Length: 193
Image 1 (cartoon, rainbow, N blue to C red):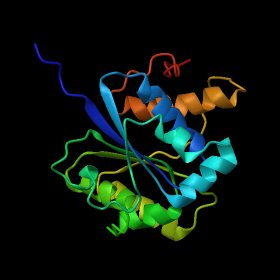
Image 2 (cartoon, helix red, strand yellow):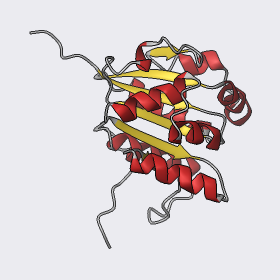
Image 3 (cartoon, rainbow, N blue to C red):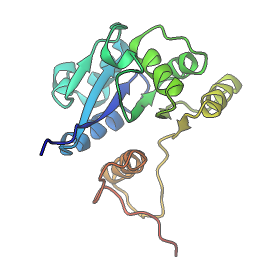
C-alpha cells in the first residue's frame, strides 16, 4: 500500500520582529513526518534572524524540507497547480502585508500568498507592528475580506505563564492547529473557568 503524500505548508518569514515564530513553526513541523515545509525568507528576514536569534540563514534552512529564494518567481509554490494546505507568514511586516492586500506579487512571498488566496486555501498572517496606523488596519481588513486570517502574535495570560517560550509555543500551537497539525503539548486549549 503506497504511503499517502505529505501535506505541504508554506512558511514565509519577513523582516518584522518575531523571527522566533517562524523558527519555532519549522521546528514543530520538522517533527511531523506527514508534513512537508516550504520556506521563503526575505533579505530583511535574514538580517532579523541574525539579530534576534543569532541564527544564520543556513541553520534556518536546515529546518525546512524545501527552501525557495525570495526572487524565484518560477518556484513550484508560485503556481496554484502545486497543491499546498496553505501558507503562514510569520512574522509579517507591514510592507509584505501591503503587497498581499493589493496583489503586488513582486517577490515569492507576496506571489505565493496571492496564489493561496486565489486558490481559496488557508493564509494566516502574523502581523508585527504597533501601534497600527489606518493603512495597516485597512490592509488587514482587505486580506481578511479575501479570506486570509490575521493572527497577531498576542500572548494569552490565562495560562499564567511567565515563560517567553511557553507564550511562543502557545501562539505557534494555535496557528498550526488551524491547519490540523498535531500540536499536543504546545499549549493547553481554553476550557473555561
